[in-house]
Length: 392
Image (cartoon, rainbow, N blue to C red; front, side):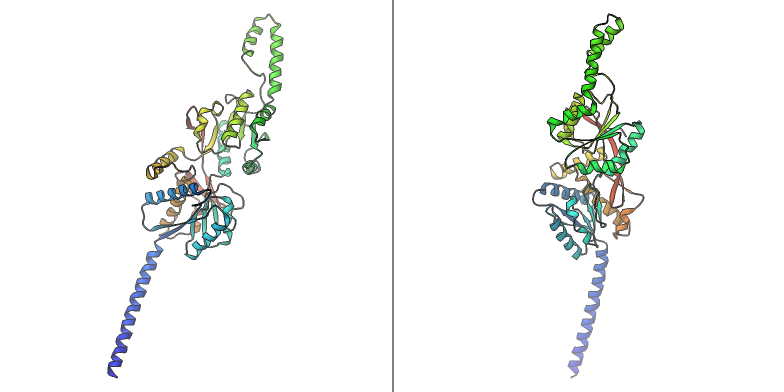
């Protein structure tokens, strides 16, 4: 009996000691876990948009490498570029206690994320409509671009601006520009996306045929004159294509790529050049194919910090031996933003930190977050020969 009592006492003490040790270890682990920043990553890592997703993931990995803090852990999941897989992956993040996620990329994938209340999503979309309350549109949005153009327009004092946009998938951007009413447009036009029809539409906008006929009539009159001043004027007019001024001083074209080139070439064919009119477009991510197009010279557009973009591209290429996707710099900044908020709040992440009124500075430049949008302080660049030159 005595041996049994001793055994029970020893068993109790052993259990108590082990329990205390387990509790102490658990507390230590909890303290350690509080100092670990867990970030979910939702990107298309398979399917049609796999290349884009992988480039964004590498940009995030590059940011991790540059920060060099072992307490930051990322958990990538494949969104497959659709709303259903994005939602299912987000639910898994929620179950694991992850409360901040970089992604998804596409606006369509945000569809059901508003149902997940415990996670904040930093999406790389540049669309600004119907953003869930728990998501931030981190892309270079049209609002930021309009604000940058507005400031530059005030600087160079232009007042009669045409807004041109295609009848196409970019109608959202065009409508946003018009609805914001920040830029007061003299007239707005929508043009056909068929390149064969664009020139004819631009001729109507610029009244090319009327100006050409005015020139022909004036030349006929001068040809009948023997006055020296008329002969001198005739020599000048014979070098011209049209006569008479146009009734606008600037043009904003909401378009990209080959169609943008067609529009600006049509203005040149209609005898309206950048010597007399300021031409603007929206963010083009520094498309170097513009360099070989005469019509693109002096074209202005808002964009992120070009010097930083070049540094990022070089660093990315050296690290992964490939060129990054043009927008992946935003994924790099997204991780930097989360880290900054976490490290400046005693290693705890809170959603409200993202809305710091002082704003932030990333590779893209200065920005702040308001109304679920990243508001970037963009710069204005122009195409000049084989360079992009910052003008504002």
